[in-house]
Length: 395
Ligand SMILES: Cc1ncc(COP(=O)(O)O)c(C=O)c1O
Image (cartoon, rainbow, N blue to C red):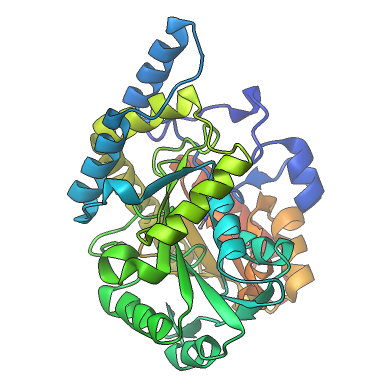
């Protein structure tokens, strides 16, 4: 695979690259787009070929998810993550965020607390608020450059009977932690003891950098009071095709979920998602392995560049995901100044850290799933802009 290939994404109305999106969110239509978490790479060749084949068939009528679709999914999870998913526990869903929203709604009441671990994917706050629940923060602690779960605080928050749900981001967007088995077990133990329903968002499961290993929550925890949200969309860069699955071991809860998706007719099958997902899980492994090696090189490049150039910016070492969480605190800029500095002076569109909660202030998230030359350009811009800050050496 040639991940160095530059592909013009503006040929289609791509959110990340759209000038109106960049203008609206960054006030700079020409900023280098690195804020949205999708990849500037083509999907695996097998996915493209199967989609082309599906298109040439020419009939796009109603379909159903065949056994071969579920077999491909199960084989993938068993092989890559040692998790034998019980076929009966799988419930299709339009997207991960749809699953999160339905599960929050079904496992808490209006006004109840939903625990999250900021800095965390900003849509979690939005899901909670749109469901008229309260955001309850169990902030991660940054110690010696590594984020950790504050278990004492989690115990406190979980033991409040008003807090009914925890949304666990595993691996964690934006800070790139891949939770260890021991950490997940501790989360499971606390939540079980306090009857807190755990929604594990595992969309980034396939993005781990060696030696880190992803442990599926439902393999680690007793699944009676939990659900796991999985999808092929990040892994194979097909979020625009949309497909997701929710694994709900508890029969009563699973039926409730299925009743909901049935009631609102959001259980329809997209013919392209069927073709893409099955092809990806059956034939996409070699591509993913190459991609992970390329992403590792991108991470290494960012780390080395920041280290060698003394810009006052450092990388929080990611263990997984395709996101780099950058620490700008040494630049001494407040939230608004940093936002302006990145978008206007450095001309790069990074997701500002405060989008992920107040704990993210002073940080920003860079999507590094792009050809290296995009990263080189972005970092060169950053270096130049930083050199113009008062008190910085020039050049
Ligand atoms: C942690 C996490 N969950 C969910 C999503 C969105 O998933 P979907 O598009 O399936 O709703 C993203 C996308 O960035 C994500 O990073």
